[in-house]
Image (tube, helix red, strand yellow):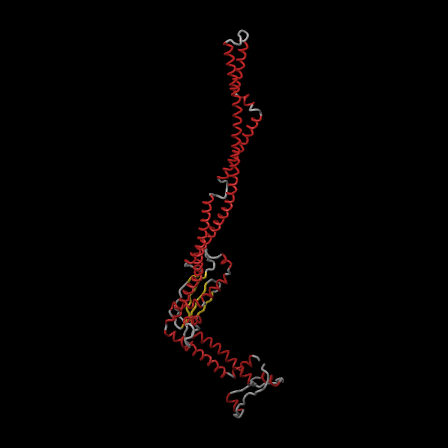
Length: 467
């Protein structure tokens, strides 16, 4: 079908086309004037995905920002937020809303849930393009109601987001407080067992050298010294009553010298005096006294060596018994120190557990007391000035364009149902023969006179395929 055929069809079907066009405009005008007005208010919310909570889990950093935005939008559309809006606006206290619920459900179900579902039907939550802003839009019959409900949804979403953040922390804080009491009791019990064991055994520290070990070292040193002295005395005693001590004694050496001089004087005096001479008798008595004293001193040195040997022997036995007893006590104290080390480890373990629980409890309490989240309201929803949807001019323009298309389509469809020959091209197409000549068409009164006022016949119809 060429342009000439298309225009000839439109010219022939102009009445139908104009009727379709007019009907489309009329319907659009009636819809625009009669449709109820709806107003949409928007409350923007900022979701700061980079604002990391210092007390939150490190796994937060691994969450994709797109997933965070999707999660926040799901929260804003959730039943929990909608029910919170119902409670905030006291919609369940409205008698009209209760009547509507009675009519719709027959009193079955929950009124708050029904009202929340009704609010969700007019709610739209979507992100702004290439940003972290969520638009909470609500559509209502009045601008005041739209702004009021949109702001209520925004505030309820902020409250729910804060509850989602703080509720687990509150539960954790309560649980950690309970566990902290158990940990404190275990620590006190462990410390009590350690203190009682130290008081019972006398072991203060499990590390280093204690007093018992020092005493064992001192006794061992004394025993070594006494054994050395005993060996020396035994050697002197076995060498003939201490000849070396006798030879080294100044008193004995002095007595021997005096005896030698006395003997020399007696020998000199015997040349002139008889053995019974008073002087000779006196000198002999003095010599006998010196020799007696020498023998007494020599015997005294031997007796002292024996006494020293016996004393050293007894001291050795005493120190040996003391060392053996102290060694047993040290071994016992070593066992005490091992048990003390176990008790101290129990105390350290209980202390670390208490400190960890205390730190976690403090963090949970701080999270439970926080009033900040990573979402915040950018602006308050205001009452919209214009209703939702296109205006009168825009609706008529759209209806005009749609009516034009419908009129053209209607004319073409009707022409296809009842095809007519309206031009030379239609005749050639219908007959399948070439056109040899054409006569120009004449109109007006002159043409009617030549035809003898014969009425015009309609165009020929044929059954053929449309070009």
